[in-house]
Image (cartoon, rainbow, N blue to C red; front, side, top):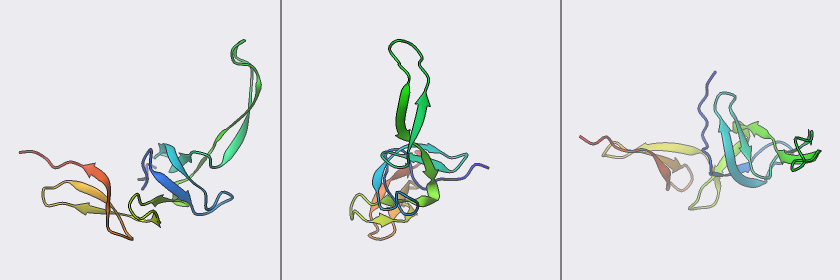
Amino acid sequence: MASKIHVKKDDKVVVISGKDAGSQGQVLKTEPKSGRVIVSGVNMVKKHQKAMSQTKPAGIIEKEGSIDASNVMLVCPKCGKATRVGKRVAEDGSKFRVCKKCGADIDQIKKAKEE
């Protein structure tokens, strides 16, 4: 089931539950089909890497694991607080994501149709 995710790539988010609760990071990747996101510096997992060639030797690599999108909240660029995301339609028909705490526009989702 494809679900909508309230955060996008390059959004600054804060983790609200789990072992990394309270840590902030930037969204590196979103996976809408599974409803998960990968946040920089959060949920670090170790991967045992097999040697591929002389330039890529074997070893244990640390990388970010995915977490559920419901466990992160967007950080408003204006007020700097963790907030829910609302949507606003302007008079010309363009859509914006809006901070629920301060009411500031976060970014533009869809441009108005030109006629």
